Length: 391
Image 1: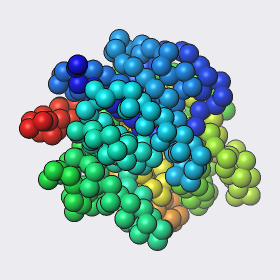
Image 2: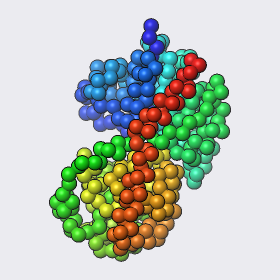
Image 3: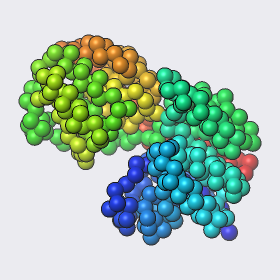
Image 4: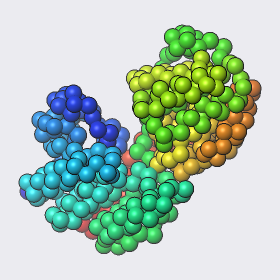
């Protein structure tokens, strides 16, 4: 019997239509790079999907993967969903005793994967932390209870992969199974070359958004939720007091109406544009002049990485993940997370100095190359070799 490899991770809860869909799926970098490494080590592939009929779904990339319904979503407090996820994985592992390697990701997937791996004696269990919840400045509950949970689960883990230096330092202090250790990986990989050779008409794109062609356009991408802290960014646009500055926000979420009203009360309703979900992010980024993102918590934010790929200078919060991507005047400017004045001053500097914008954008584009998916794949391959050398 060939040895099996299982990859699981939580994600946002899908709509009923998506949950019941039988459409083929394309693996994201998050999954594809580890899967390629597992294949190189001779494993048969299994994977978790948040689909009701996961076992009937095929992978459009050509990988021969047998999927199961992992039912694993993002909320640690969704007790019923998490119980279903636990039961589903237990059943799947019982039916597939050949699974010798679990690569689990993200908090919920990481918890359920490691508990079930322990129950069924899975030989190798590794966990990729996309951002520990006990980051600097986190609520007391995160810095105590959630940290203790991670420390406990580490005893059932052969390796922890981290995506930023702060998390790596924390994980390095954990006691892992079989003298396991923590590793640093530069994210899940971003395709820097995919932003090349894209033809755009900046003036036409701005016109389609109702933005003057000579305006300075700042962009942000991400769910419209409190953690992304868009209120601070919007207030900073107001305080910067540059009438030619427009801010486009790509994403959906429960705060949209609240933030629209807030922009109106600040008198800049016409300068803040909520675009909802977009499938043309690359074109929008390439048409923009800078990236503005005041998030309070990130692991290693893909939106910031994509902005850097597009050659955008970044005005971002000085938090874990962001500080791994840029330094002040090395691809952009870092601001204290809730310091509206600091963001406003940074905006003025970029709006008023086109040469500075260009210079910092070129630096950002160069810096992001160290996070390219080819670099990440090589690093993952080295880690897998190290973990499995004595297995």
